Amino acid sequence: MKVFIAGATGALGRQLVPRLVAGGHEVTGMTRSPSKQALLRELGAAPVLADALDPDAVAGVVAAAEPDVVVHQLTALSGSIDPRHLDRDFELTNRLRTEGTDHLLAAARAVGAHRFVAQSYAGWPFARTGGPVKTEDDPLDPSPAAGMRRTLAAIRHLEEAVTGAGWTEGVVLRYGGFYGPGTSLAPDGEHAEMIRRRRFPLVGKGGGVWSFVHIGDAADATVEAIEHGGRGIVNVVDDEPAAVADWLPAVAEALGARAPRHVPRVVARLLAGEAATVMMTEVRGASNAKAKRELGWQPRHPSWREGLREAVA
Image (cartoon, rainbow, N blue to C red):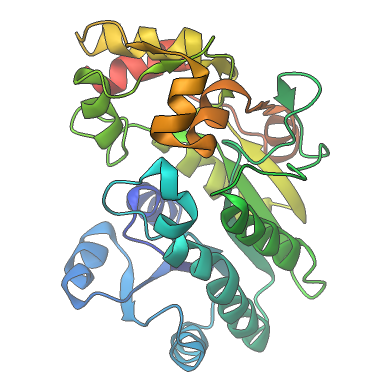
């Protein structure tokens, strides 16, 4: 098939493009940076230049590529994220999830793309009630913490726009927290460095449940979605959602770092804000049963316990 990828030079895109090329697909990769065209060629994609927030530019490059499938992997998360100002630091990513999604959908519709695959997130958006592990049918948080409301609204927009596009197979992949090459949980990643410096504390009882996925496993699932995904939302996470109290000390040990500091919840709220405190103490994990059942996907790293140790070694 002809596959058009917006965001082809990100951590996932760098894993995804070679897999698609090896599978015999013709890949066009969109970037707004002329300096990244060479990387796309090295990965095996035909590079095109466009700003995702310019609807005419997006329409032009998609029309020229005439893809069967359009893949939306656009984010803008370079640099550190201040949890006290999550919505501020996600402002551009949120525009890519709203305006960028709309521009790509319009361009895909104009060329008759039969499938549209988009990146979403399973890390913290679920309602913070009920059991610790959620499926795709469970509701998102109706009252997110201050500082993350605009970001959740952007995620909702993307998911509703893609799955509601009746003219195509709209597939939304809710990825867990990435680890592995090019992510924040690689040996040189931002979060790994924070854990080494004991700047990633254990808050309260550390009851927030996180779901992870190795970046290579996420790319494998994305290939499956591109090739035969059906309309709907799919969680792409490993087999073992884990409380922060379990995974954070284990990762610190794997990094050869001292045990994380312990910070009471009330202190964390004052220092890092409510959003960060919620992530460490209240969020829910995600089930991957649907991905296994409908995509035929099996993670090569079924548990963060082994996968994260390998990734940060």
